[in-house]
Image: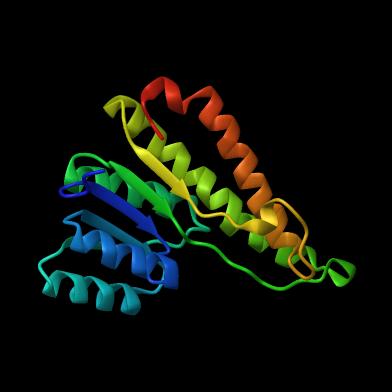
Length: 179
């Protein structure tokens, strides 16, 4: 796939995975909208990439806030005129043994790992459907398929995301050329 000139939105851009993906895609010539909660880390990453002739913008976005997600997607689309690829890496893992679980930890985990992705999809899909193309990549892991001690909430959030995305793919994405 040719990446040069593609517009890529990356959530969780200052985390390990998001940061490395941003660096790789910048080298490929992508135009990047980098989203993260920590403004200082975000500015440092954008400054680093732009110093290497990358074309990227930073958007402060707390993925627990639906309005901030909406604003980030709309700002990206307005700035670049389209969104070709969305890479959703924002996530959280708070060890929480099922035997002694705390519902507040489960709620926070679901809000970040599942609901944030749902909010992104709510705002990305109309754009990509209109374009009749796009790629959406949401990060999941092995615990979405089987339980791992201490990771009950994390596994449940990733399983919910994986199953939702499978349904979305079967119902909608192929019809509009979205992967």
